[in-house]
Length: 348
Image 1 (tube, rainbow, N blue to C red):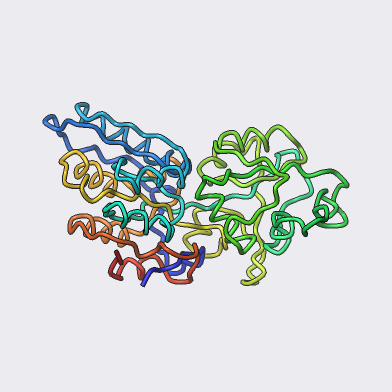
Image 2 (tube, one colour):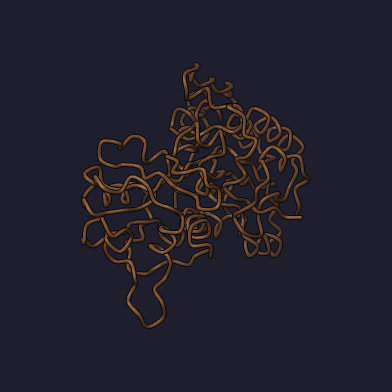
C-alpha cells in the first residue's frame, strides 16, 4: 500500500511554521555525548543537504567525537550508494522509487523513511525581468515539455508564451537528472517523470542554477525555496497559477504552503536511515536530534517545518525502528495530508 505524493499533500497542514513567521527560532542544543564516537556518512539530495548540514553542525558542537561526512551527489546519486548498504543516511527530495525499493530488497538493505521538512519549489526569473510575474501550470508545461519529434520546440522566446512579452530567447535552467528535484518538477509540471526538453541547462548544483538565472535577464529556472530566499535581490519568484485549482496566481511562501494554496510545487523532504546503522549509538543520537531540531532548523535555513504531529510520529516510528515506505514506489503525487499518511503502516 505504497502512497504517492503530490503538492496536495499539504492539505490539512497546520501552521506549525511559527518558528519562521515570528516566534522564537532558537535552535535546541544537541544532547551532550562525550562518549559518542564513530562516523556518520550522509549523501543525497542537494536540496536537503542545506538542512542536514546545518543539523550535523549543531550535533557536532556537543558530539565532537563523531566524524560527520555530509555530501550532495543528488537524490538518485545518494540512493545508488544507499541501496548497496554503504551509506548510513540518504537525503532525498522525493520518495524512494520502486527500482530503489527492489534494489534494497535484493541487497538485504532495510530502511526507515522519515519526512523532515517541506519545500516550496520556486520558479524564478532574473530580478530585471519586469514582464513575467505569474505563469499558469499549462504555460509551464508547454515551456518545459519535450519538443515534438523531429520538430523545433514551439516555445523558444518569451513572446511564444504570451504575445505581449518580449521576442527574446528564454535561457532555461533546472536540475540535472540525478536530482530528486528534477524528477519532482517534471512529474508535477510536465506530468511525466523525467520528461523534459533537452535544450536547457541542467545543473547538479542549486547554487549554479541561481547564478545562471541571476546572470541573464532573459532567464527562467526552478530552485528549492531555501536557495531562492537569500537571493531575492538577484531573483524574482514567479507566482504559479494552477489551472486545476482556480485559486489564481500564488507566490511561494511559508503561508502558502501551510494553507495548501501553493500547488503543485510544494513537496516534503526526507531522510532515509539504514536500519542496521540505526543500532549504532551515534546514528540513534543523530536521528533523534534531527527530529527534535527539525522545526527550528528548517526555519533557520528557510525551509518550511512539518507539523508538530508529524515530527512526533516520525520520532515514534524511529523509536520503534519501523522499516519501509508510506510514500515511495510510484508517482510523487497524492492529495492526502502528510499527517494522515503518517498514520499508515510503512510497507517494506
